[in-house]
Image (cartoon, rainbow, N blue to C red; front, side, top):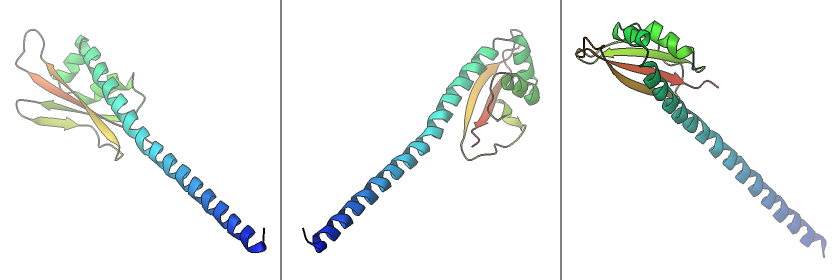
Length: 135
């Protein structure tokens, strides 16, 4: 093998190495882009189920019907370790009270519709829990 052929082989080896490194880098970026979405979807599903479970508690229902977003948020914070804010809307008047704005571009909204107690089914509230993932 001549000197010129050895140089060409090293150039080809270097190009293959660069392509492999670039491919691994792109795959790594692709995987990290998908994880927040999967985490947020799972977070939304878990929060919706939690809201359903909490709605069976009379104190939680009373707080939601009174539009006390701070107490509702406190009930959620007892179980969820993710940053969140809560908004409670009166469906008849579309009057919403929100405690804070999400501090992220990656957030989900878990909504739950709740009716009043046995004596007052006409009152309807929508609880919106805004949850976000911090890095």
